[in-house]
Amino acid sequence: MAENSEKTGKVYLIGAGPGDPDLITVRGFSLLNSCDVIIYDNLIPHELIVTTPAHIEKIYVGKSASAHTLPQEKINELLVEHASQGKNVARLKGGDPFVFGRGGEEAEYLRKHNIEFEIVPGVTAGLAAAATSGIPASHRDISSAILLLTAHGASEHELYVDWDWVSKIQKGTVIGYMGVKQLPNVVEKLIEGGMPPGIEAAMVERCCFSTQKVVCARLEDLPAEAERQNVNPPAIFIIGEVASLAEKLDWYNRKMLSGVRIMITRPADQSKWIYQLFRNMGAEVIAYPTIKTSYNDDKAGWEEFIKSGGKDNWLFFSSENGVRYFFGYLKSKQIDLRLVGRYAIAAAGHGTLRALNDLGYQPDYAPAVSGMVKFAEQMCADIEVAKIKVIRIRGQLQHDNIEEILKKAGANVHPLTLYNTEYAVWSEDEIRRLFMHPPHMIMFSSGRSVDGLVEVLGHEKALELASKSKISTIGPTTSEVVRKYRMDVELEATRHSIPDLINQIVQYYQKK
Ligand code: SAH
Image (cartoon, rainbow, N blue to C red; front, side, top):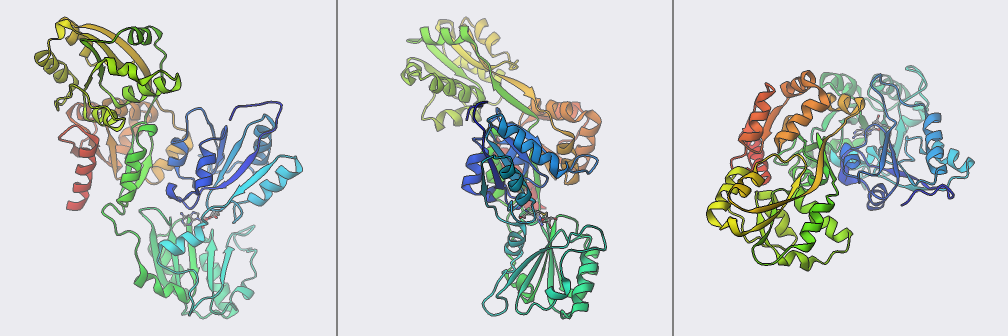
């Protein structure tokens, strides 16, 4: 969607769901990935943000390092400002935008300023917490009413809700938002109003996360039990006979990696399948890329590729990114893929081979040797390279000596440099949120991603994070970089591939 200053853009108030990135709606996801700017809150899954295309502007308006939220008035103005510039705005809010999310106020403000808007509903935390804790919000025999309420008031002692009225609910379920601090106060008022002190109740912290906590108790005991088990926001309380089913219907945290938080540092656009795989196994994914790549336009390299081809002409791929940027360019420029057919193809590395296979290519030369130098030496031994011309597809920072080795053996090598690698930049808030729930395991798939962590956090903070986590790497070269920074390596893949590294991580937690 292009920016157009003549026309006003539209604002989409989108519910992101309760925290699991898979729980946004298809419509919300599609808008998020096609808008011009995303304005998002606290409690939005980081993965939803980092996997959107790089050209989309992202603005965080949640709690800042000083724990202050951007005032609502400023957020409203921001929405109008961007839409007035002709941009389509994805205003991403936790849960459902119209359930305790101030979405109503934002919509009113937009209407007042003649900005078109659309509301995309989301899975609200209260109902998600019921689902993931095995407490049916309604139940044919014991609950035919669901009351969603907020325990948040203007001040600590003042609550907005008429608790006397709530306490009279019969055969119903009371689901409370923002109630951690107010829980003792709320329970006292409910019991005063006549709610049976022995009725079942539960507190669900961080529902839909792999580290979700469910605390069940009789209503009168819930505040003490929640305190004993150290329940922290965000949490939902559920009161009603249905809560007695929690134990019987418990189903959540039962997967292989339940309770494990894994931080993935490689670029987000290459990691979606890894995020999904880990999540399917029950892990919580911390999608914090330390590096990112961007396209580099190498005109001379492309000219060489277009004019060459034929007998003894090779395309040499040595990274997944090389494959991605190479074929991405051909597609975007509508260059006939049959040009590729004039070349023999060499693929170094497991990920490179897989990326080519995914596109339907079966490389002519792809021995399973680990390490780029070894690969190039092996190629010189197996093929008469003195006769060949090689278009070497590469990234700007790939200092792996492949070109030198091939040249020395007499090959005519032309680099085609297709991408730049840069360090990511994390905001203060992202760093704060990372340390709030630090990973159990950090996964590094290249030395550069380790450099990236030290670059984005600074060495001291990187060491602090490493001291709270374990580190796993794709192989010895990456481990060396980790140790260079005085951090310890707990796990190392043996076959220098991401699937193998994932396997090792799974086995590690299975043994524990
Ligand atoms: N619009 C949101 C609610 C925002 S109010 C929605 O529809 O869900 C913020 C409150 O939501 C938190 O204080 C907490 O009570 C609840 N909440 C949000 N995410 C949660 C989660 N993952 N687990 C438990 N409670 C959550």
